Image (tube, rainbow, N blue to C red; front, side):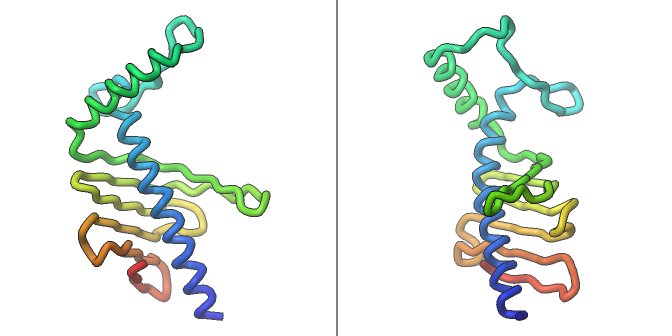
Length: 144
């Protein structure tokens, strides 16, 4: 039973890290394009007239986001995940996400079943493996 639980934990952590890494890329690209307030919070961006945006306009927006992202070295975000497994919607999980260049990702679960769990990935470190810490008893750290 313990070996199965350990395997399930590793599988869960690996899936979440992959999702987190993809989210980092998406969030980073989106976040730098949106206007910011003095305190650094993001403001949503919508078409002023509510009309559909053309394909060319979308490409222009994406290109400007890519240019802006080149100036971003790191950021912190709140990542909310809700997963559907076998047709059943699981409870939402809230994570603190930190990203830095060169590619480094840190996630810490703040709520949900995995509260306190931490995951770290640094490109070129630890043999390309994810470092995961359960944050609960028994307190273990594993490389995935």
